[in-house]
Length: 367
Image (cartoon, rainbow, N blue to C red; front, side):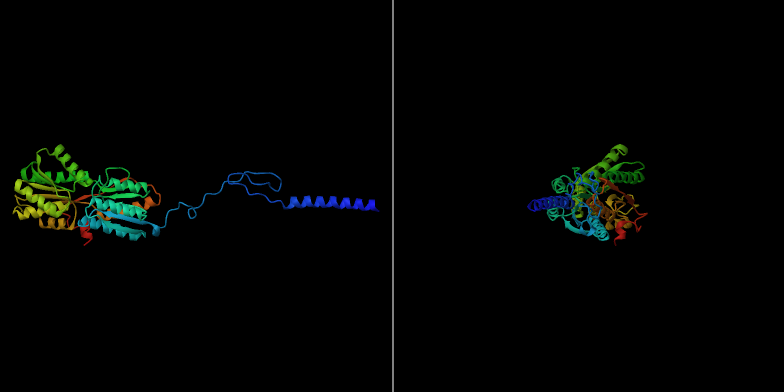
């Protein structure tokens, strides 16, 4: 019996071991495959390569474009004493509202150090993008590099930089506008003398500004190539400012009282010159044989009124409102990672007595 019990006990132990082994096989867990590795055994005992993970959709991607409400665009305008830049500011604000983005506005008051500091502040505040109208094309380079280093898109409007590290530059063709100014003055002087000859005073813009450089270049190149008998008898900086241009023109009149025409790099230059001409008793209306022809750039309201009165002959108009709106659009595109064309040119056109009251002129539209 003892021997029989031993046999039974051995059978029971063997059965227990078999059941334990079977239980282990049935409950063994499959370890998850590492990313890019292989999965565990299949039910048939085979292995297979793991399928690559699907790319996250746009809503779950870590680098998705920010919502419009999360975009903050900083702006640095050179000055708000110039009607052109007041209109640009209006365009910036309208486009920001239309697109649902936040805007932080600053005014540099024609102070290069102040503008650099403002851009540095916008960077430190975490602006998504910055739109700048530089006072000085060289001085802005330091601030530009800081924006680049911070990975913040930088859009220039109307005036640019001497360095190409910016995201986009939105401007009018200033060289072409300078050439048109030369053509218009040549046309007027041909009417007066029967050929394109005479003496011209040039009131330049702000030293260092790209617009000053380009408007002067286009004007002088056109005179040299097409109108060699038109002489620039005086050339001084009016700094795009009426008061400065008034003072400069008064000095020119004292030193050089004989001239036929004035070319101003913007309308504030020509309006200041007009005041000096009037104050000196030299002002004659259009059509008078002693009329001094005046040609400027920008299309501001006071220039349009002077054209109506026959005091100024031409202003070559830009579109500052449209430029401000376009700058906001470019900034949003850059923040969203879209490809932005680096250099973009806006249109321009001549305003004279024939179209001065056209409602499409930006200065008439913002009354």
